[in-house]
Length: 263
Image 1 (spheres, rainbow, N blue to C red):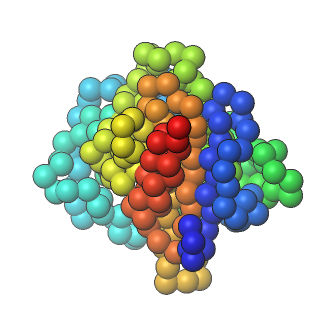
Image 2: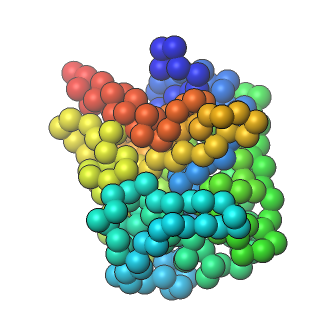
């Protein structure tokens, strides 16, 4: 993180103890749109309620406009029909814009609050709490599911949400209806949009997110995830105030390498 504005925090999954940190005050107080890091949370809800089937494939449509905002996918064009797991792995905006319409407007807001995105984590003192606006029309609902409208979270809130995913993975390795989410997060690191976070000698699972920074010409980037993918020991969030999710994933990969190569 030297010379990079942002924050990095590593947690022990089992205990919730902070193992490493860079600019924890930024992680606790900076509010930012989470971008695509919300997609696994949205998919978990849809799978759990049976409104999305894991094997159903949806075609990725480009160009993609939502409420006048262009939201084209950044994954390779050859990836054009995705099931639930690969929609996570390749972070397909088209897939999630489509399935988001299966949620009611207030239902999405309730689910995001329940996940903890408007509550301090109590990991450090003097935390901010996320801000959430309930969608009133379909384009707002779709953009909120993509982490691009009506929601700002702290990096610590994101980290805690993914720590909870890691704890769920530990409790139920097969994971039932949630299996495509865990599979997709592992695929994202193995060959998808978060491949830069792939550590040497072990596995990881996680998600990138990139969103516009209001009032600037910059984007900010997130990587949040856990490792090893099958039996998580640590959870990590990297937030770059200037950059993209791919950049944050590359930093996370170096941290994971350092952790798992220690004697």
